[in-house]
Length: 162
Image (spheres, rainbow, N blue to C red):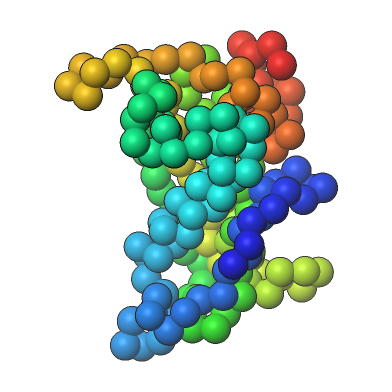
C-alpha cells in the first residue's frame, strides 16, 4: 500500500485487498471502503507540510486543532474481492473557512482500463477548544495550501486566499 500525489489532480492510495478484509463470500463489505477512505486521507495529511508540522499532536489533540469527520458516504457500484488492486483517488470538492469536502474514487485495475467500483465523500470540520465544548476554527493556512492542488476548480477555494 502506498500513497502519493499524481499529476492529474488527485492524491492516490494504492491498496491490494487482503483476505482478512473480505467476508465468507470473498467480497469486501461497505465498512472496508470507509477504512480505505480514512487511510487515504491519513496518508495525504502525513505527507504534507501541515502534517509534518503538527505530527502526532493532531492525533493526540495536543495541537489544539481537531479534524472532525462530520459526514461520510460511499456508494458501491461493483463488488471488490480479495487480491483486487485498488486505487483510491482523493480530490478536494470544496474548501471553505472552517470545513472542507473530499471525494474518493475507487478504481479497480487502475490504468487505462480501470473501472470505478465505488465513490465516496467526506466533510471535515476544523475544531478547537475543550473536549466538551469545541467550536469551529479556521482551516490552517498550511492545510489549505496542501489541499489546493487537489481542488476541483477555482470555485472550490472560495473564500480562501492561497
